[in-house]
Length: 379
Image (tube, rainbow, N blue to C red; front, side, top):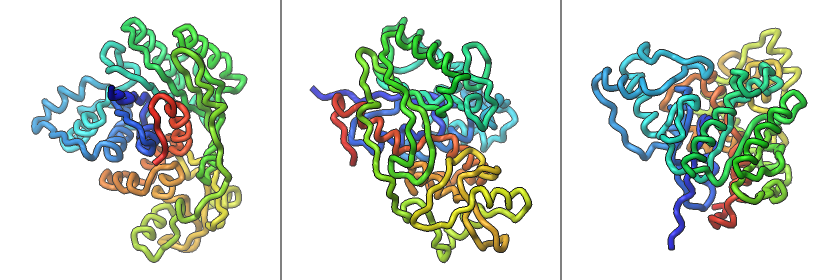
């Protein structure tokens, strides 16, 4: 009897790092739906993962609004946005992307009874209120913080339990400060809830991208939960030697006009604040280069890296290009090039990629999660 596909739902989907990781594994899966409200992320997810799906948009503005008004959207990922303010072409673009992604919309609007059958639910809820670089307001239940959106997953799981449709697997991802003293009680409350639902939770794993073939010092927390006995994925994860191929991640062949143009976009003017950035983050671009964590804003005092560069703004330095940022997050060059048609600015793309997950780490986790039941292996 043929095995059914692994049915995956990406909550807080972003640009789909989980989908990219699953593509790199030889297993039969399908993304049965995603949840996101950020328009840029929805359109970028669609560009990367849904190019082979054809959707026609209605010609009439009223028909576009009739469909899109069922959802809550955001232009900045912080507050809701009145889509009536969008021009017709923007509405068509959003309509097509939302349909292609099979987006169920904002997590707060999702009803459990409307969701499809799910085997794996991945939830990378907002980190802003947990991160040391954020607001530090926590994720307490009922707090109303963005990180507190975690508890919308509780609501959804309770609804699915009533329908006897709980996902067999869950994967949480967030910043490592989810275990900080200010957040640990809330995390324990969350894990206790999962236990009450029949899940066994593995120990929290703090995994660094440096140990999975990527020259980016990026630590993130992951927790695997499984209906039934614990999977103990944390004991099966295999770290790699911290050895990298320069050409896999960095592009300094400036004779190529495309690479040169992208480097020019990433170049910064020499200002007093950026001189300070240079002193803190300056790197020589060579085979030994490693960078700090890519954040959603690389024009800040502690950025991922700055490289010496002579370009359109004279002699100064540049940030990683968006192409390089994609590669340093484990996405492919083809993934990056699929987004070019969006014509998003450096700042927009920086926010999207900085809020994503390193694909290489997810590949290792998924491989260990599904090796027995789904018989997967890396391509």
